[in-house]
Amino acid sequence: MVKIQNNKHRVLHRLRIVRGHLEKIIQMVEADTYCIEVLHQSLAVQKALKAIDATIMEEHLSTCAIDQVKKGHKNQFVEELVEIYKYK
Image (tube, rainbow, N blue to C red; front, side, top):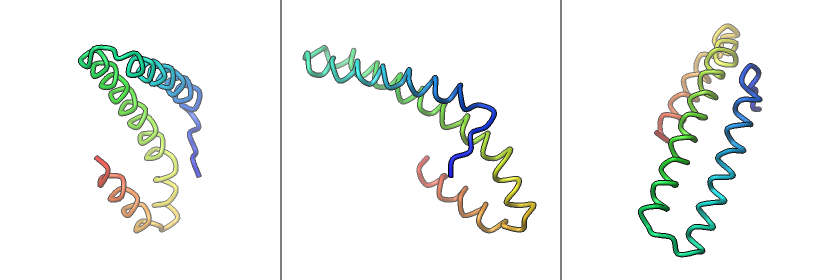
C-alpha cells in the first residue's frame, strides 16, 4: 500500500509534469527530432523521477518504516530496503 501523506500533492504534481515531458519526448521521436535534443529531455525526465523517488522514500522512512520497526517487524523493513537498493 502506498502511503504518501505529507507530500502526496507535491508528488502527484511532479508526476503529472513528468508525464507531460514524456509525452513531449514521444512526439519528438515521432517527429525525428535530433537525437541529442531527445536525449536531453529523456535525461531531464529521469532526473525528475529520481527526485520523486527520493521524496517517496523519505516519506516511507519517516512514517511506514518507523512503524514497522516499532511493531517489531525489523526484518521486513530491512528486506524492503535491500530490495529497493537493488534497483539503484
